[in-house]
Every structure is written in C-alpha cells, then in structure tokens.
Amino acid sequence: MSERPAKIITKIEPQKGRKDRVSIFLNEEFGFGIHQNLLVDLDLYRGKALTDSRIEEIRQAEERYAAKERAFRWLSNRSHSRKEIAQKLKRAKFSEDTIERTLNELNRLKFLDDAGFARLYAHDRLLKRPIGKKLLKLELQRKGIDSETAETVVEEAYSETSEVEMAGMLLEKKAPAYNRFDPKKARQKAVNFLMQRGFDWEVISEVLEGKK
Image 1 (cartoon, rainbow, N blue to C red):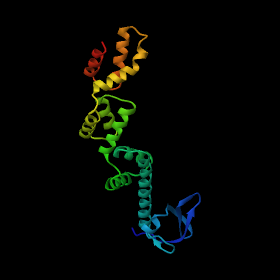
Image 2 (image 1 turned 180 degrees about the vertical axis):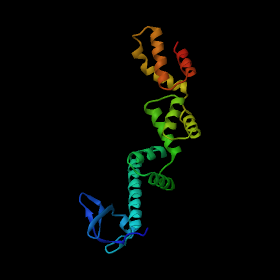
Image 3 (image 1 turned 90 degrees about the vertical axis):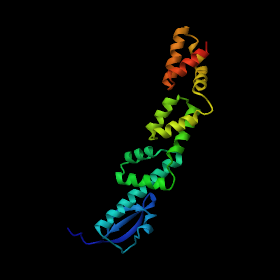
Image 4 (image 1 turned 45 degrees about the horizontal axis):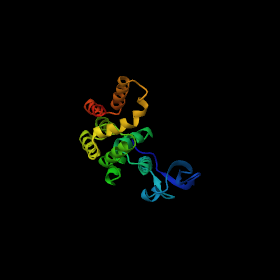
C-alpha cells in the first residue's frame, strides 16, 4: 500500500504557555507539537515535505525526548534505580520501546548506577530510620537491585556498626515507652519492635540478653 502524498510544513510557531515547544502546521492545519530543540536535530523547516512514515518517526523522536527530559528531572531530585525510572515512565504512559531506549541512553550517559543508588539508599536508611540487614536487602531488591549487589551493599553499610549495636541503640530510644509495662510485656514489645525493623531473632536475643 503506497503512502499518501507528502504534507508540507506551512508554519512553525511557539506554543502558548510552552516557550520550549512549537506547533508544526502541515498544509495550513495543525499537525503535531514538538520540543523546539528537535527542530534542528530533525531538520524541520518551513516548506519541507513530510511523508506519513516520516511524521511517525518525528512523533517517536518527540516521545523519546520527552521521556528523557522527564527522567532527568526525576534524577535531579534524587538518585533512582533503573527499575524506579522504568516504573515511573510506565506510569507516565510512555511506550515500552521508548522506555527501553531511554533507560539504555541514561546508562550510556552514566546517569543510572544501580550500585551507587543502592549505597546511597542504604546509607540514608540507616541514618534516618535504621533497619536490620534482612529488611534492608529486601528493600533494595524491591527497588530493582540484584541480590548479589544488594548483599554487598548491605554488608558495606554495616561495616562500621554491627546489627546488635544498631538494634541496641534503637531499643535504648524506645526504652522509656516500655517502662510502664511489666517486664514480660515490655520484653515482648521490644521483640516485636525489633522484628518489625527486620532484625533476626539471634540479634534480638543477644540485645535482650545484654539488657539484663
């Protein structure tokens, strides 16, 4: 099936309220909008003829540009894992092809670094709201970090403070809240608290033994 006759770009004008975007008019009618930076990259100018297939290529290039810009904004706010960026782009309704191309481009430009992201996440987690090794590893894996990298990062994060020391410090802060309970109930509350924070029974037991 042959393509329809090419359409001519008859006007290019800035969009109202979007100074970074322009509207492309084909045969005097609105055709599509794109980021102004793409005009030169895609060799678009008044009088140029565009086939249907070329128009589709331009729309795909615009989608990829928009996805990359969106990803850059997210990454400028904080570090993200590859999986997090993929999920956000999917929620933003970008196509699977665009998402994959965007992720690969971000990797090429070294904007995505799962190991670096994992180290920052682990450091902030232990600093702001400490948890045990098992839960920390699980959280990293949920964010798309592979098991081996997560394991390495968790061990690095706990290289200066042991789980027993971390759990003990957390329990010290909670101790005043347990003073009004009888010893048995206070102990059970302490156990529940540390288990919820992802500490193993061996760690919890050692902490509680040390508190006797």
